[in-house]
Image 1 (spheres, one colour):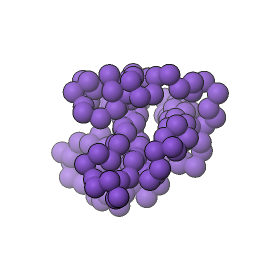
Image 2 (cartoon, rainbow, N blue to C red):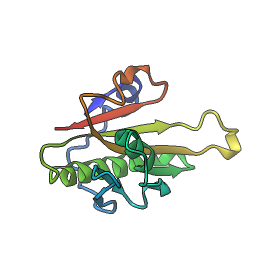
Image 3 (cartoon, one colour):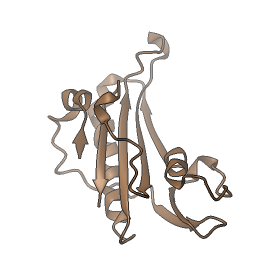
Image 4 (cartoon, one colour):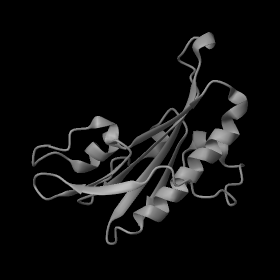
Length: 154
């Protein structure tokens, strides 16, 4: 896992070695109308798989594969982080069955600082996508304002 500077400050000291895989989000593989495979989790955020032949499937996966873990009490931060890491561990295991493919898993944290204090919600957002055609969707994680962790599944 690669942590940006903000993620190092917030999460690098938490021991994640004992965390078990959380299998509540199984990954599936489907094919679009042009025979190209794409990968998803849950309901794929209702993204339409009937895309044009020039649609970048990695970006479609980025848009469709979002799992959000939100909470209102900051005291739950470590517990929710551990929950998110469990999902990452499960996804890494599941993605190994798609041999010859490289995937990226992204975990970001939002501290809700743009909301009014009484409406404040904290959240972790997880996404994954297949790396295609020697391109990266995220090339520099230190450019993000929020904590970001990328796991390269190769």
